[in-house]
Image (cartoon, rainbow, N blue to C red):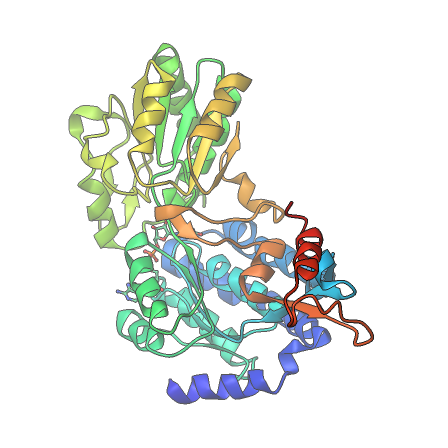
Length: 454
Ligand code: NAD
């Protein structure tokens, strides 16, 4: 491990990654390597989760290709020196900001979208000119091996390499000195990563999770809202960091919502056979989800099979914030429904809890929309939709408070792996002499004038 990091540092210090053409070549190479191995990746993720190749393409690989295309197209612009104005005190001079790569980076991935969550930060790291050690999640074992195979057979380890493993290997990695750590996973492990990074003052991006609410207000377009929401909730069997975790529905439309949601689930035909549904990652998680159920509150579904890692799309009704299902991020196909009468009371209750990664507002009432968007703190979200904000790379993606630190996608990803060096450049033909001795009243008056503070 020590040798690996040393080699990467040596390579970084050779300045090769600072060359923009080198970065573009590596991005194109990564695209080619993923494309050539699509079949291998499809097979691996199917073996782990029964995830269909349609889903693998649309919610993993396609996002990587669009990220790579954007980075290839824009990296020159992102890496450009940016001129800024100079203050009068420094006149005459130029001021500019010079982006530089942070150096040797560590990317730690989560299991739920194993390819997307491993490679998307890598694309940002390459574009910004870093070297990379990637540690994918060990839980989808076949996907992790496939990632290691395609990277380690095609890239020079002193530039980009994959280290596979679980807690012991990650703990060992975290003892090393990196220049950047990018972590995707739970808030609990996020804290461990943050503490390890602190000992070397290593900057971090922490992409974490939490309980993301979806508001269904009286004025929403029920048919369209439910269609979009049910898709977003049960995609990947609910194992999505930005999935709507629970519903806050106005009392007057609750029954309408429940009926529409039931109908939408039935029409969606979530099953392994037709490729519309995927397995829960492991038996432990099936059991974890089962413990959240309350037989008296199941409105739809509730069946599961631990051995087959199947968990039926489930809706729970008449839920309160005290129920087991509301105590932790669900990260599975259970949708608790909480009714409200007064939006202010609901906002107050959400505010008492850790800041969510996402929030969704289904409404046609601008006042209600603005109220929720301005009064609640959360990572990001959507109005009259769910999940889809992640596909717009102009919308920096990340959490706040318990749901994360920092953001990425598009230029914000480049920024996450860069330091912005601020430079003041002065010519030598003139010096105002105000700062030098002797300190006279005239100089003081001039300084005050130049600073514009009186
Ligand atoms: P996790 O925190 O258990 O694991 C994430 C990574 O950390 C894995 O690579 C794992 O090997 C490593 N790890 C686990 N325990 C560790 C320890 N004790 N010390 C060091 N490393 C350790 O998370 P997960 O189960 O893979 O993913 C689920 C969580 O991730 C959910 O909370 C979800 O919301 C969140 N998530 C967030 C995003 C996002 O973009 N914000 C995306 C996907 C998942």
